[in-house]
Image 1 (cartoon, rainbow, N blue to C red):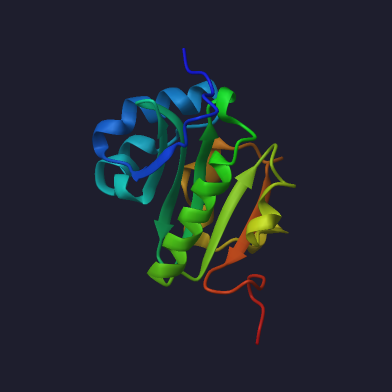
Image 2: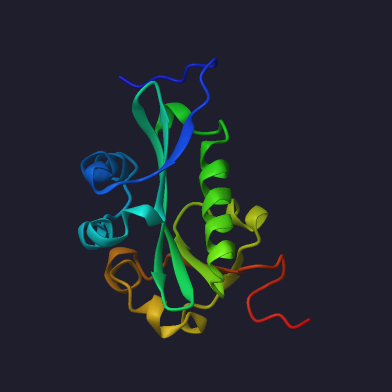
Length: 165
C-alpha cells in the first residue's frame, strides 16, 4: 500500500523500458489510457519521467514526440500523492525537456484537468487546429473520447501557440 509520507520528497528520474509494467499499473489505477504505450516505451522510454517515493512509483508523465511537436500524455499521480506537487514537478520537467529539444509546441487531451494546465502555458485549442502528426497518434485518434479538451503550449516561450512576436 502506498501512502503519502510527509517527510519524503519524491525523486524524479527518466524512465527505462523495464518501468513499463509499473507505469501501466499506475495509468490503469488513474483510469487513463495506455494506448500505444508498449511501442513508445520500447523505443522512447526516456521521453517519460517518473516520480518515486520509498521505492514505489507515485507519478508518471511523458512526451510522444512527432516531428517538431509532442503530445504530453500519461500524466498520472497515485491518489495518496495528489495535491502534493508531484504532477507540477513532472509537467515542469517535461516542458523543460520539450523546450531544450527545440520542439515547436506541446499538445494534450484532458477530460478532467482543463483548469490545471494553463499554469504551464497551455491554452484550449480546437481539435481541428492540432497538427496532423499529433492528431494521428493513437491516443488522439481513439484512446481519448471526442469530448476530451485539446490544449496546446508553444515551446521556448510563454506565449500561445501561433503567437507572433
